[in-house]
Image 1 (cartoon, one colour):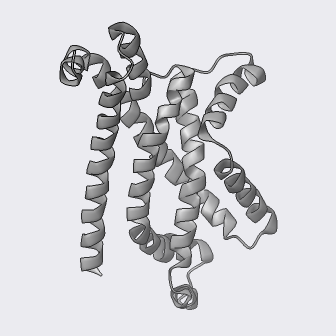
Image 2 (tube, rainbow, N blue to C red; image 1 turned 45 degrees about the vertical axis):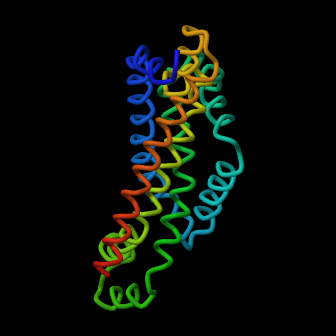
Image 3 (cartoon, rainbow, N blue to C red; image 1 turned 90 degrees about the horizontal axis):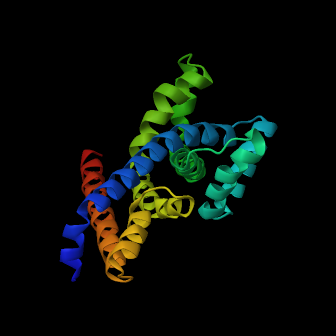
Length: 218
């Protein structure tokens, strides 16, 4: 059985895997962006304690593998609460927390790229620090970092493959099911690799178009 025939025969499995992978990636990007924004603001804060907390979180998360983080959350939930966390929820939480650390650095760099003169001008107009950040700095920073956030989404799509280690029915887990059912080890992986490539390549091209439009608007 060749690759195309295998895909057609087990397409229902792959469709489920695609849905799970994209849902985890999309929701994690949203949650990671919200938490990452908060972390970036804390890291830029003049309050030393808040800055230390944010920095430690970012460095720890970025310095440990996502597979370890997913395992800690999945198995740690039982240690802490006595109940097993659902695998999908554990993967979503882990990927979101992981993404937040990277998004925080993206947003921080975006905020720091804004001319400090704009902050001074807004403060001279009577705006508070919070109002300045909300109405002046963040809107411009978000425009600058949209391409980087798109690249983070591409990364998340690939990294969610480790969710299969705790039984989440993503694309990688789907390949394991097809392997055991079809008694083929190689072709199911070729299909998964092709699907991952299609998604990441398409999104990368869309990001390129977005960057071009933003540059043109500037």
